[in-house]
Image (cartoon, rainbow, N blue to C red; front, side):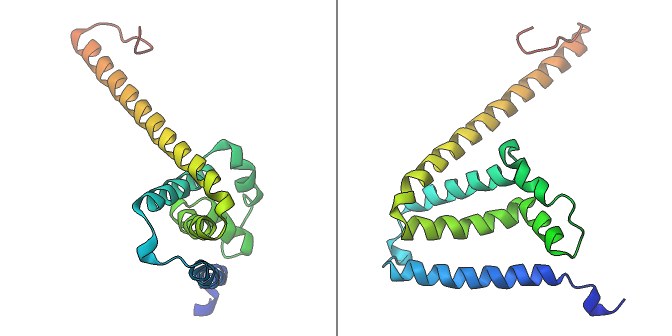
Length: 159
């Protein structure tokens, strides 16, 4: 196999396309009059949380599993295979969604409310994940104590 046959050309194509979109987005945002110094901490937090929520929505949530399933049969080094890798990678999707969210936030004020809802949803998601982790940790520690005392472990934290 030749060296050029080992290169995933679709990854290169997606990267070039992303750079092109980044350039277009930069032009759109700067034409709207926004400068880096004009972006408030609040705006940054809302955009970051909206990006986080969109990323989790696409990569992990069951409601968008149908999108991920569209690319399930993708073989490596093909367009579909590269798209499959992209939609299943939180770091990749996070980068793409950061570009989309930032551009939309500053060029389409009508979407601000949507971004705010996504940001609130992100906070709620983190709170729920944290509550689950605390509950699982408490249950695990309870089971250890019960086993140490020789008691029969129970099925839940309330039992």
